[in-house]
Picture 1 (tube, rainbow, N blue to C red):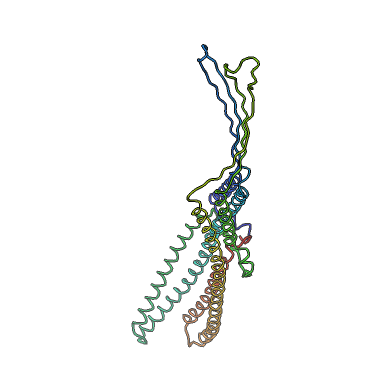
Picture 2 (tube, rainbow, N blue to C red):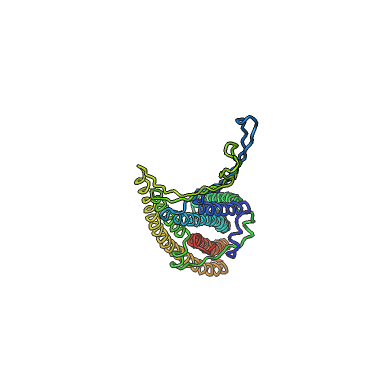
Amino acid sequence: MAESELSDILSQDKSALLKYQNEQNSVQSHQLENSWINPVMLQYSKNYSTQFGSTIDTQQFIVSVDQPIFKMGGIWAAIKYAKAQGKANALDIELQKRQLISQALTILYNLKKAKLQLAKLDLTIQNDDLDIQIQKESYEEGLTNRTLYDQALLKRNQDTTSKLEIELNIAKLENDFSLLSDHNPYALTLPNFGMIAQERYMNEQLELQRDAFRVEEKKENKYMTLTKYLPEISINGRYTDEDLNPLFAAPGSSIKEQYFNYGFKVTLPISINSFDDVQTAKIDYLNAQVTLNEKKKTVANNFTLAQKRLAIIDKKIALSKDDMSHYESMLGTAQDLEALGDRTALDTKIVGNNVKVRALDQEIYKLDAQLELMGLYVNVSDAM
């Protein structure tokens, strides 16, 4: 499965939800960047008066604006805050997408593992039946007591029960996959992950990138909070077009129907809570820095732990190969003894099945390794 296909594994509904979250985040981020710009107010009114003996109507149209232009750097901090928040939220959405893809792939790997485990149990149950037959014949010939025969029956029942449990687990996995994807789980080719370089793993971690933007967001918020209690300069302007009151509409009057009002103001808020407000924002910023440092340690530890798990899986594969080699040697011996009449075909079949079981074990361990490797790739940029 190519990297471009990994994103397509999700259902249309899941993909649409993620798309809409991204669009919403983009709109909200842009809105927040421009939140410092006050709206231009348009106002139209019409009034009627009977004060002058007859009904007189007057109309008024006003355009007004009251806009901060200097806030001790607070405006620029607000823009940077909005950008950092938007990027952090976008990475949050991308991480949600990665987790959904990871869940889908985990189900596919576990489905493949379950199918191999079923095949392994089929061989084991075949051996159980063969052992039952051997123990039964030995018992009937008086060579053994009934205990070995009962144990062989019990083992077959246990293995058959395990097979039923795996079949039930497969049904559950298929159902879980259908909630994430519209694809047929058995029609998809699983990706083959290789070991990732530690440097890339650390440098391209989406979680670390997101938390770095959270630190920047908290830093700008701290500065924005401080500037709330510093001087602010605003300009205001107002354009008016109105009918004159008859009292002032005498010939030669200098009063105009159309005119401007403009000016500026300086504001300095004084609040008893200003110090606590600034301290809270500062603590949020420091907490975000510590969270980022802790996340770096966690990510590094996860890589080290994954390496140890992969090393253990490699040892399991090596042990299984060693066992398989011994069983293959035993199979040759069993075949020779069967040809000489010293062993039955039942013994040869059991050893042959054990060879196949060890081969299936190795395939299962390889899938365990792929699950570990996928866990390393899931939050690495451009990896899924």
